[in-house]
Image 1 (cartoon, rainbow, N blue to C red):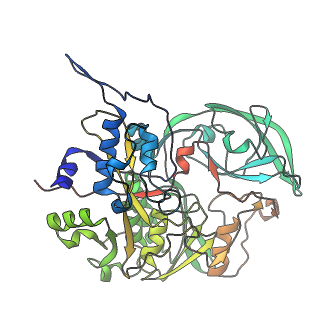
Image 2 (cartoon, rainbow, N blue to C red):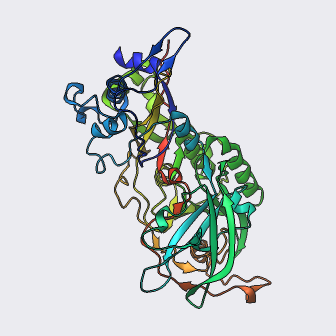
Length: 478
């Protein structure tokens, strides 16, 4: 009964991430709620009791939490949340809390204040004192794109300060940035003498970085670089696969190097669009969810055991003829991206090219207070997903290991979708070992290996570096 009351009494929305954001609040008084006659003050104890109740109801490991009486309910709610997690930073590397549920929901729907870039850091020479930031991608419609920046461009200074190993990680956080640009020739970074000044804006992310069809070795190769699983772009995915199908695509490369996750439903959609023999799989198991014992009993009581299972669905734009799919991966390929790989492994040949994935086989709900007593948004881990063979063995720091290991350290970077781009070219040479020729082959600069830092690529807004898959809990029946 207590769980059902919580289901009815709070607003829960599906959402993203594993990195915490800490905001200091007053120690004794949280945000007051004002009506026409009274002002109600809520203490940290009120908020923390609410946190504990909801975590007890939905958290994947409620039996590993301390009892409410054994916790410091007077502490700051941001600190309190992390204090009750199970083996935080080890077993639970992912649960988080945000002081603004509205901001959190925006972030998980791809709405952020950004320049619109992600960068890969490289040392400029053997001393490892200075760093160059090489653009991994530029978002469509972003201030960065409008300023003329593109993948492969190089930043050597920000606001006239040289980038170093100690400041590069935070150098992109200001609202307005003067970016000093550089070149890379003959294995040497140098200033180009050019700069652009760019100001961040609130932007709806378009997660489709690039889609194209490449004629290669007698094959039609579909390529899609996808950044985040956003349900608002599901129809865009369908349209892309419709074009792939119409053009006779018979090999497929999905670039998930920069995709840290998103909505489970969108991940399942992409699975349906590419799985082999979709007609024979409709209404058969794609994946299964595991919740905590109490929530599982409530779901089964309300909806039956079938509610724990997601089945394949017919998608008219499924390509239909694929025997395999290539995924381009990095250590930032996480959660909903890894879910697709796990979904497909029982049914077709899945080839991974690049680095090992992040290693996140669990997902979350977003929990907020619908009575608006406070603004917190909780993002606790609430479920684990297994594939049709009950496999879910990638939840380690090494995630899925690549079949073909590559380091993204060859410069200059090619544009995404360019057959000469390092990762895509590896997939193409597996499909057919032929040399790619263009009318302007002489203008293509040779690449050389540069000294890349052993860290994941970073964005100009830290919230975009959060990695998760999220879903909505089932609503209770009246």
